[in-house]
Length: 159
Image (tube, rainbow, N blue to C red; front, side):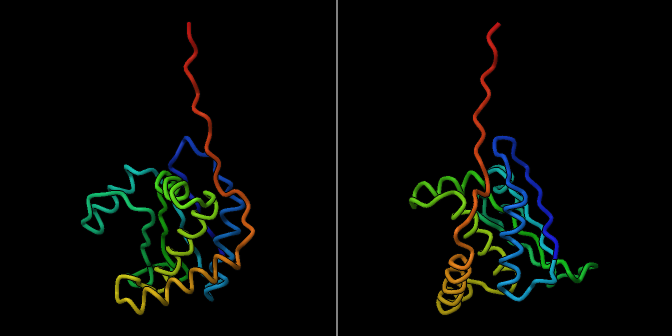
């Protein structure tokens, strides 16, 4: 099992080992322990662009999932790509009173379940099924280490 992590943010320090372990635990819990996963952490501008391009929705979103098994995938072990907007995750964590790590874990679980064929937009029944599975997996992951750290902004030096 491999998790390929790419971070397109400068203001955040990633905890690569923690993120990879969390992703591997999620994959194992959904029966995909032999699969590979691509995980990308992005900002709101990139996420908005991806959402506009692939879903025709001109706004940012918290997580997108791109399954590879539905396409003509040259790498059969690659489950797909999960893209998470860290600034959106930060806002959602603050609004809900959760930690950023809990929010990121929930979004990662949500994205992986989409890769496995779950789709809450299909029907109300499927939404309930997906929500139950998400809750069970997130509980299994706790306690979570810090997955991302917000870096302090550097102030320019005065001459």
